[in-house]
Image (cartoon, rainbow, N blue to C red; front, side):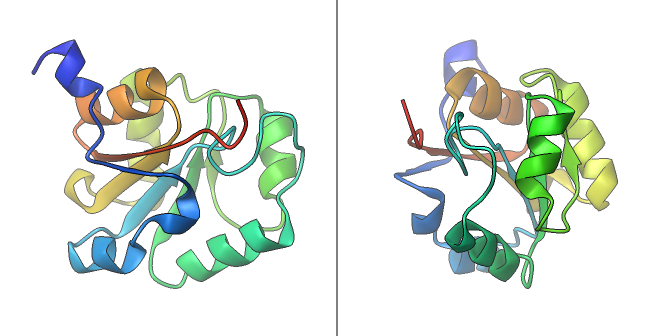
Length: 142
């Protein structure tokens, strides 16, 4: 598979709210790795709003959910402190290290995992070269 092919997501949606999660569940997806900055919240926002918190808490009923972010510990921990979900900061995407650590943290399998992010060269390329599914969403804020 070429570098170009590894930058092609399995699917694309405008926002995390438009993804058909029930369909993912029916396809055997059990774990979701979300990027944080510009996927869930804008890069200049510090905390999730009530809609985002309720949405992720609803997903937790059907999926194992983890935040996989290249940003720093303080930013990720502040953003997700109300969610009670695991996170990896300085994940070094697109390197395989963060993806591998995330699978171990959730006791997840590659073929049952999907990453959702807004960046082709970190989220999508990293997921595809590691062998897990990928969904690209438009950046929350450009």
